[in-house]
Length: 113
Length: 114
Image 1: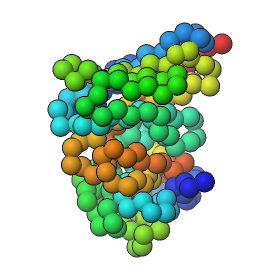
Image 2: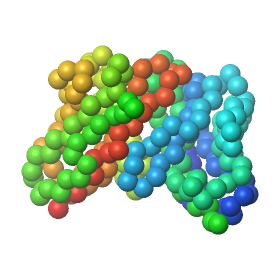
Image 3: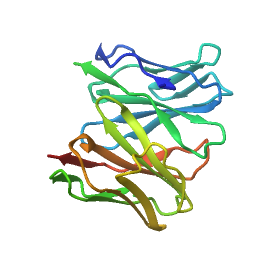
Image 4: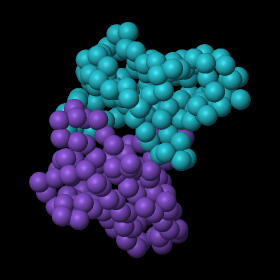
């Protein structure tokens, strides 16, 4: 039973346009959500996070939105750049789990020049 | 530049052989995780430690996998005997063990069992 779901395995976007990556979760005990980016042959790197008490967090070109009632979060990248091409993982932390993250399967983003 | 260090980066081994992967967490981090990445399952948690004590290894096949932290600077993941289905990328990550803190990944150990 997958608690964190990224239903789109891949996404292709034109450079300069907005990229929207989606993530759904099932566990209402999750209290912190994170996005990681992964390039080939490298480990995942932290991108942006959001606490469950907020509905939006912004960092430069990256914004994460959280809709708790829908158990849905999304990552917006605007404007998208070719260097953003990577696999993006959504992750969630369960309250009291001491930093143990549950990951989705990832979405591969391709930004075309 | 603090980082999680993993060895070996790549390993090809024959079925039945023992494989040991090592991880040096970031200095000062008290929580260490082992994840496995496959095409089918994405990133799945195998085991994690807090202050060197195992907290959860329910994601790990107990009959062939074992994880230990001999000291605060070394975590090991051992597979004995290895099987072709163990072929994957194994990531070690470390963190401060609180919900608001991120965890930091190493570059992974690419394992191929033939």
